[in-house]
Amino acid sequence: MRYSAACSIVLLTISTCSAGDPPDFRWSKEIQAKPHVEEELMAVPLDADIYAATGRQWEDLRIHDSDGKVVPYLLEKQTKKQTRTRRTTWTGRNVSAQPLKDVGLEIRVRLNDDDPQAAGITLMTPLKNFEQRVQVFGAVDGKADQPLVSDSVIFDYSQYMDVSRREIPLPVNTSRDFRIVVGALTADQESQLLALTRSLRGDKTNERHERTTIQRRPFRIDRIEFWAETSYLSPQETVTTEWPIAGITVTEDAEKQQTLVEVQTRREPLVKFTLQTSSRNFNRQATVQIPETTGVKTIWRDVGHDSVSQFKFRDLQEQKLQINFPEQRHETWRIVIDNHDSPPLQIDRVKAEGHRYQLVYLAAANETHQIYYGTADNQVHDPPQYDVAAINAVLQEGVVPVPATLGASVALAEVSATSLLQRINNPMILGVVICLLVALLAWVLFQAGRRIDQLPPDETP
Image (cartoon, rainbow, N blue to C red):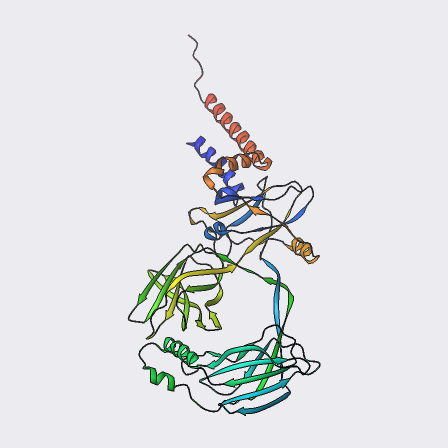
C-alpha cells in the first residue's frame, strides 16, 4: 500500500505540473502557415468547429507551440476597409410651377453652376396617403427636353403602415435644367396599386373602400431636393460573413397569428438574420429570440426586433428583410413574425450573418503551433489573461499580420499519447520524477535495512 501511494504521488505530480496543457481539452487543430525563418506576427481566423465547442468567454481556447508551451494571443474581430457611398443633398433654388389642363402639375427647376450633377430628385410634401405619377425630363444648354424618367410612382401608405416613397432616381445624365410632371395615375397603375394595397391590408376589405382610402386632393409640394452620391474608402470596419444554417423549422401559431421560425446554428457570433421569401407586398414585425433556462423552466428572451417588408410594383423593387441584434452565440434561435389577419409568409430560407474572430500572436522563427479548444467533461477554465502589449505595439506600427489557416479537427483521444510523451520529455517534469524516484528508492532501502536489523540473531548449534 505504501508503494502504491508513492507511485500515486509521482503520477499526481506529472498531472499537476501539466495543468492547462492539451489533454485538458477535447479538440486540437494545427495552425497552417508558410515557413518563416524569423519571428512573425500571425493571424488565424476561427472557424465553425471552434465556435461550436468553445465557451461564451473563449475560456477554453489556447495556442501551444511544438514544445507544449502556451503562446499568448490577442482575440479580435476581423476588419477591412469598405467602399461606402456618401449622399449629398441640396434644395433646388430656381423653381417655377404651373398647373396643367389635364389635372397635373408641371415644375421647372434649374441647377446652379456650382451644384453637382443630380443623381436623383426628392419631392418633399407634407401629404399622407397619396399616389402620384411622375415624369422627369432633362435639358442641356437650353436644348429640347429629353425624357429621363417616363413612368415613376411616388406614394405614401401611412394609413396601412410606415411605407412611403418620394425619391425619383435619375439615370446618368448631364442635364442642368429639369421639367417634372406630376399627374394622375393611369388605369393600369391604379389596378396594380389596388392589388398592392389589398396585399397590405388583407382580403377582408372590399375594393371600393380600398380605393377611396387614397384621398383625392391637390398635391402640395413644399420644396424639391436634389441628391448626388460619391464613393469613398472607409477606415477599417468590422466585417460580417455568412455562416451556414444547421437547420430551420417553420410552424404557425394560429391562436397568436404568428409564424415561428426556429433556427439551428453552431454558436457562431451572429448579428443578423435575413429572411428569404417568395411572398411579396407585405410589411410585418419580426422578433429574434433566444432560449434561457432557469432550473427546469425555459423561456424565450427577445434580443432584437425590426419590421420586414418586400414590395414589387412596376419599377418599384424594395425589400428590407434583415433583423439586426447585438452579437450573440447560441445553438437555437427563434424568429417570431406577427401576421395579424394577413396570410402567413412563405419562408423559403434564412441567412445568418455574424462577425469573424481571429487570433493574433507572435510566432517564433521556424516554430509550429496548435490550437486546443473545448473542455473535457464540462471542465471549467478561467479566461486567459495574457500580456499582449508587444502584439499591440506591433499592430500600432502598421504591421499587417501574416494570414494562417486551420487544419482539420483532431479529437483529444488521438493526441493524448503524443501529448503525454511531450510532457514526460519536459526537463522540469523529468527532474521532479527522478527526484521522487530516488527518494522512493532510498525510502525502500531504509525500510529494508530496518527489517534486517529486527531479525533475530542466528543460533550456533
